[in-house]
Amino acid sequence: MKIADRAVLVTGANRGIGQALVEEALKRGAKRVYAATRQPLAHLDGRVTHLTLDVTSAAQTQEAVERVESLDILINNAGLGVFDDLSDRAALERHLAVNLFGTYGVTQTFLPLLTRSRGAIVNVLSVTALAALPIIPAYSISKAAAFSLSQSLRALLAGRGVKVHAVLAGPVDTDMSRGFDVPKASPESVARAIFDGVEKGEEDIFPDPMSESMAESWRSGAVKATERQFAALVAPEPVNS
Image (cartoon, rainbow, N blue to C red):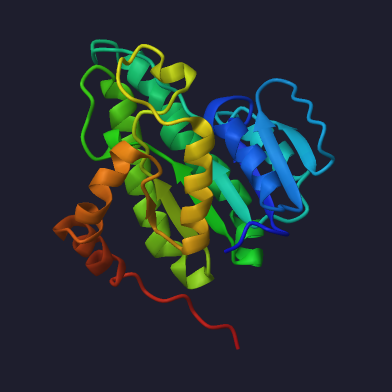
């Protein structure tokens, strides 16, 4: 899956990794980039089309898909991350609404277009999907759920020719991580690594130095092997005569 001459949609495109993904897609020759944000967004490049989209709104999601003629790559990047201690159920529900159900809703709405193009879904997640960070537990839980969603979709959509990539990012220099006093990757470098991973066909993309240190052991480990075994249980898609 090359980015050149493709139509790409990025949610949460107004800042951080999302903004960097829009710019990187343009650099790689995307023919159309749909930048989905909750607020108005202007861009000087004529290949960019803004979509007003709160991923928790089914109505806005449906309005957005009606404006997209064709789509090759859907990048579910919009996310929520705030500090909590799991004492407030509402905080967990807000994280799940955006990071899990938002990703699910957008994916299901745009799936017919992706099936038609035999395209790709890219879910921007976090290494906290693999090991919870207890100072942001609701975020960690929601990303773990979204990772399980990604693995399930990967198996279920393979027969339709739709690939599903999970981005397991470490600390990135964005608004969400401002309070973390740790080395952070730039959004631009992460965006480049994400598209490199998509073009190489990597199922799980580790786009920064911290996450990359986990990549080899993950890809060769027992959990990944079990995922492949479970995926083989999915019945193949029927062939239309």
